[in-house]
Amino acid sequence: MEVTVHKQATNWLAVVVSISSVSGIVLALLGYGVALAVQTRFGLPHPLTFSSTLELFNLGCWAVVQILADSFNFSVIWNAVRELWATTWPMTVAVVVFAIVSALTLRLIVVIIRKSRPWLSNLTGRAGSGDGINGFFTRNPRILRTLAILAGSLGLVIGTPLLMAFSLVALVFLCALLALIPSVGLTVGKAYLDDWVIRPTVCMPVLNRDALIAKRAAKPAPSASLKTYAAHCIAIVRAKEEIDRGRVIFATTSAVILFDPRNGDVRRVPLQDATVKVIGEL
Image (tube, rainbow, N blue to C red):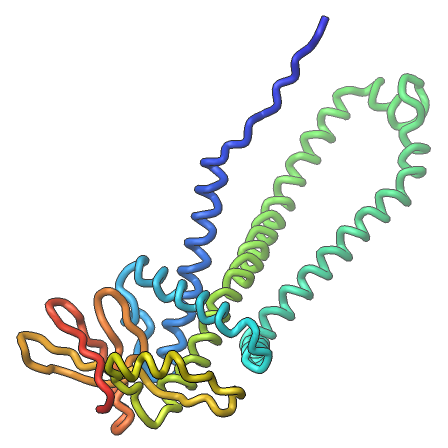
């Protein structure tokens, strides 16, 4: 007689949904870190940087692109890691200490159980015989039930606070791990703002077709030290009238954050019914 064993099929739809959910959380946390970078550098409250979860995803995707673009620039990576460590080292130390203490506690419990096993065997005696504590409880079942009730009540009284404390520590541990993701977005965002918004002395030039072709054919700079930093500058036009202009800090689908280097003014300008025009100077 043959027995057919059916392998459980993998629910790929559930796998895709799970991966998408985790990716969405990571992107949202990265975007939140980018919004914190704007607040850190320019003082604009970070909730004003975005107005929806979709805009958080937009900022998070930007952070991922920046990380991939600078993945081969070791100086940028080293500066980012150094700043990230300076920001998160207290939380990292707490996580490491918690993990070490948990591992040592678990090891101690295992050692105690192994050491006490011969003593428990001598105390209980052989099962079925009248010797030891096992035989005593066999002859006195009422005492056994009473002790079981007392042990259960004592375990409930002592175990409930311990379980709540462990749950709280686990929640703090999980929050500490999740907080590392916005820290990455914060570090990437601050590096970008320093290099491409605050540091430049000029705006990105507006080039015609011939200039764009010549720029494409030109050889890139052989060294990063020769890189020219220029800010992206735009003007906001509404009803054929220019209402604002400045360097772009970040832009979402609903608004753009502008910076005026002359007086340090930072503004969040809604883009509804507006035209965005790239300009070469402020």
